Image (tube, rainbow, N blue to C red; front, side):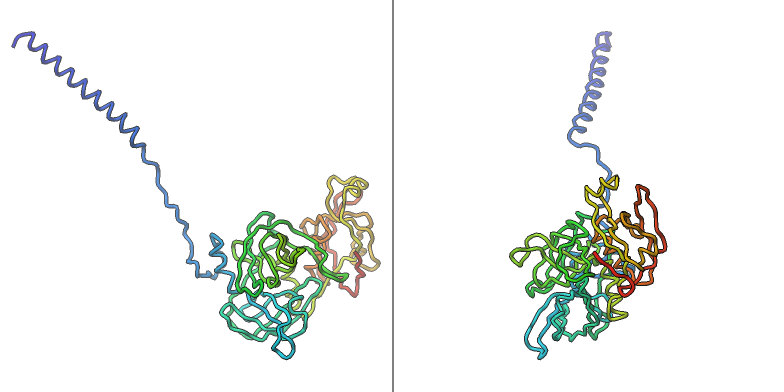
Length: 371
């Protein structure tokens, strides 16, 4: 072959190799545009128990309103109070089963008429209920029906309830049984001046969950299905729901119900002081760093407060480590204890913060409490 022929072959081979290299490069570039690199893959499902199962550990957390509703509706009952002849309805409301043996919480105002109390479960079985005890000062009452193995709700720690968290209200408004509504916690420690009497305790959880007549005594629960409070009242000009509902906090409910179960009455403890919310003027006069706490206006003779050396113009800021920025919060904290229980109180005196420990609380016959 002539030299010019070899040169032609070499040129063709070079051009072919260059074409292949260019094709592979362009193919790679085109492919990268059309098919991006495959990302890592992960399962998005959550491992959880079936919705109709309540594990004995009580650690199962529902994932949505549907699951929470399924967990709690069976433990909320319909209450009807009839006249003594047992025929004519007088009043009614809701209740919450708190023990498998038939103990039920409701509001005092639901059963205070003194008639025949009937409880209807979610399965439509109706029972005659016995009133174990009532407490008008907190608007709570305890009932008992003769039944076993009932569904129950467990208490939440209402101190840990936060403003803004989701809650469900469960009850029987207008006799519409097993009604569930949703809302958020709007505020805590509300006093709405609805309860009468010197020793009345109002430290309500405020929510915007819809509550209407018939919801009284029903459950306010968190997303775990735990009892946050007992629905008790609404603020309304029409008598129906207008955006504000109020529940008795679970930590107070627990203590009152325990007393009613054990004694048939409430064993109340008192510090024995006259008190007032700290406002801007008081804070300025006492040179406080913030407008918070409760001013001690007077200490009663022979009271727990006197024994603990609490003094006029002390500012109470905490009980057992729980902040008390308002009178209702302080009253709720103290009301959780019985006479003979010991508590600690944090105070500010002359600008100095100090803790009074081991304060032995006295009962109503031993301490003259005034507001």
